[in-house]
Every structure is written in C-alpha cells, then in structure tokens.
Length: 344
Image (cartoon, rainbow, N blue to C red):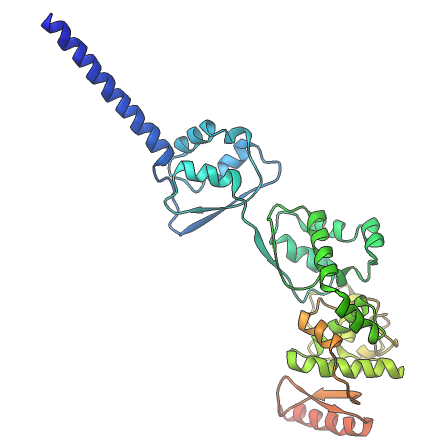
C-alpha cells in the first residue's frame, strides 16, 4: 500500500513538473524577448496583398527564434489576419508584443518633397517613400478624368502638389495619395489666398507657376516678395518676363535631359523655341518649372508693391540682388556684375 502511494505521489510530482515545463515553454514562447537587432527600433514593411508566408519572412528577419514567433502567430490568429503597412518593432520585444504590433499598429511615414522640376520627378521622389511605385503614381497623377474633374491639365498638374511634410500610411495607394494631395491643395487655397490671387489677376495655378520662377531666382526667402514684385510689374506692363531659370528649363525640356546641370545662361540659349522660354514668349509659361517652396508662393501672394523692373546678382551681398527701376540703372548694375565675374 505504501509503495502504491509513493507511485501516486511520484506520478503527481512528474505531472506537476511536466505542467511547469509546459507552462514555462508557453510563457517563454509568448513573453520571452525575441529580437535579434541591436538598434532601438526595427522597421517592418508588409506589402499590400502579402500572404502570411510573405509577411512572416519579413518579420522573422528581426527575431531570434522563428519557431516561437510562428507558434505565437498561429495562436493569436495572425495567420489569417495579415495587414499591410509599416510597423516599428522595439529591441527586447516578446512574440506577443511583436504579433500585436504587426496586427494593429500601422505607423505613418512623413513624406517630403520639394524642388521637383517635372511631375515625373515628383512621382519618382514619392515612390522612394511609400509603397506605390513611380509608374503607378505617375499614371494616377496624370489620369485625364481626374485632372479634368479637379480643374488641371497635364501642364499644370504639378501645381496641385505643395511642397511640405505630409503624414501618410506607407501602404497608401497611388490614387489615394494623389487624392490626399488634392485635399491639401484645396485646404491651402482658402478664401484669403484666393482673394489675394484674384487681386493680382492670377489663378492659383498661375501664382504657383510664377512662384516656381521666383524660387529659382532667389534662395533668400526674405527677398522673394521683392523678386515677385518685379515679375508682377513686368506682367502688368506687358513686358516679357526674361527670366533666366525659364531658359534653363527650356533647354532641358527641348533636349529632354533634365539631369544636365546648366550653370550659366548664354545668349544662344535665349533663342530656344519653347513655350517655357520667357525671353521668347510673353506672359507666364504654360506650367511651373519646379515645385516652389511655400515661402515662394507666399512671396507672390504678398509681393512687395514697388516700381522695380530689373534685378541682377549683388556682388557685395551674396545670394541677394540689386534692383533697378530703369533700364539705364540696371545696365550699370549688370556691367558691375560682369566686371566682378571677369575678375573672379
């Protein structure tokens, strides 16, 4: 009888030990630290339409024990609940935390863009920051039905995109991103800004186009309202804008080579036959020559009211310009600039 009781006690003890081992394994599977990266955070990007196998391989690159991760994913139902997006894992996370993260904590990215010369360049820039590729973005941006409904053309499509920082989900589709930019555009052009544009006798698209020239003329934000005032004066007087940046853009556009770097405008360039060449054609170009900073757009909307018609680089105050009201005064300033160039 005593031996029988000993056997029962032994069996119970073994059972308890087994249950303890099982409980420890379950706990360790769910709650034991399971990351293999040394940085504080680790980004995981799950593509749209990814199945569990695809998602698991991506996530598993950041863990130590893949089997434990898989067991946790199965038990928590992630196998049938994969969601695309950008997820942030943190060093020392356990499998329970990892699966909870990739299941429900899609973290937005901050999309930035500025100074893009063409819609193609913009699409390529955005494609480096979200899941959508450049071709799908370009197709969405130039979709004829969309442009017509939104009030743009292929030439003015770029004016819809205001350089800034935007918080969007990484897996945002090309069309959804485009629509989000339209919403920002419409929000920016509030009643106050529309009234300022109307007072200048310009549409928002024309303000943007003029701002693109101002952007290229001066990097000094405090000078942009004055430069904008010069071009507005020329437009109001029926003068050609004679803007060097439009000549540079025209050369690139005619030669279909936007990678070339043009440091100086030569006299022969002034005759380039392009609607963007404001030395050859009066008025504004058919569209912008770059995505201007918001400061350039605001510089046009809040342009200085003055009588200047000309400007040239100021050799005594680098980055700024000397302004003139008459051609004679401008010629003297330009001659001084040419002499400075010859000496340097």
